[in-house]
Image (cartoon, rainbow, N blue to C red):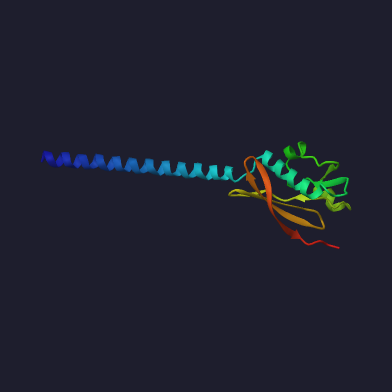
Length: 157
């Protein structure tokens, strides 16, 4: 009889241990999934320095050889931090235009789209009321380089 009581006691202790272990495993799994999801979200976002570097490449490709002296840039999709330290374009003056002001005036301001970062590639659209391109970038070392262009808006005459 004593052996039966000891056996039942051991089974109850083992069952309690298994329940505790299972509960602990569930909490650890939830924690790991939450941490992995937030880490993935962080990895899929570009830093301000990366965005500035991409903007600099786009502006250089678009305006380096153009005759325009003044470049109107919409503030849509450009954070205050980026506007404060906006990349310059050689021999060009950049003027920021609010989206509402651009829509109400005759100014055909250039506008950056949302920055997207997927895997190793970044993409951003850039255009004005007549034309637009989607630029694709890949980072080589610490430099972003353009790897492709896609027309996003037809040229309107």
